[in-house]
Each structure stands twice: as structure tokens, then as C-alpha cells.
Length: 141
Image 1: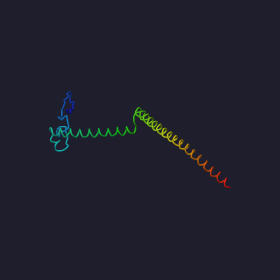
Image 2: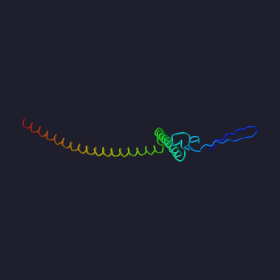
Image 3: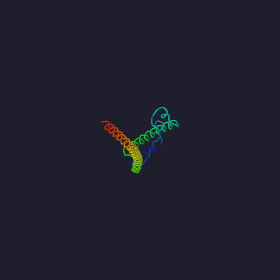
Image 4: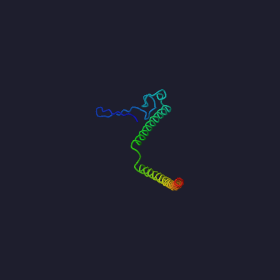
């Protein structure tokens, strides 16, 4: 791309074109700009150096945008469908845990009811023994 300057003089238009390089790295005075010895020299190495710099800054910009998107994604949260699926999953998990706990408690209740029956039988047996002992003592008096 050349810089064109239009000059109007007494009815005629003259176009002056300044020879500029169309890309960075073509050399000083050719639009490539100064940027170190390699870029000043111009040529393929200057173009390559300029391309590397462009890639570097493009990558930095892309990384910054990705970091911003990740941060914004965390701030906004997950989409509603994902939240609903997680809530359903959590509810199912809690229901399973509740059912397991309920079954365990019912099992313990049956165990303690059986122990209670055994203890009642043992208590009744001890009461009979105490009564028999009292009867024996009363006979001796």
C-alpha cells in the first residue's frame, strides 16, 4: 500500500506516491519501521521477525481473552440446564442416602425390639427367682 498524496495546482491534479512497504519488517524508510538490527535491514528476516512479534502479541491477546472468559464464566455460573441436572443428581443421591439410613435404622429397631423381648423374659425370670427366695425366707420364719 503506497501513501498517495493528491496535490491540486492550477487546475491539474498531481498524485505523488511515496513508496512504502505493505508489511512490517521491510526495512527502515519502507514502512517497516525500526525495531532492531534485523528489522532495519529488511528482507525476509525482517518480515519473519515482524511476523513472530505479531504472533506473540496475538497469542497474548487470545490468552487474555480466554482468561477473561473463564473468569466471567465462573462469575456467571453454569447454564441453567447444567444447574438443574446437578440439582436432580444431588436430590437422587440424597434420596439414596435417606433410603439407606432408613433401612439401617429399621434394622436397628428390629434388633433392639428383639433384645427388649429377651430382656423382658430375663427380667421376668429374675422376678420369679426373687419371689421364690422371698417365699423360702417367709417359710423359715
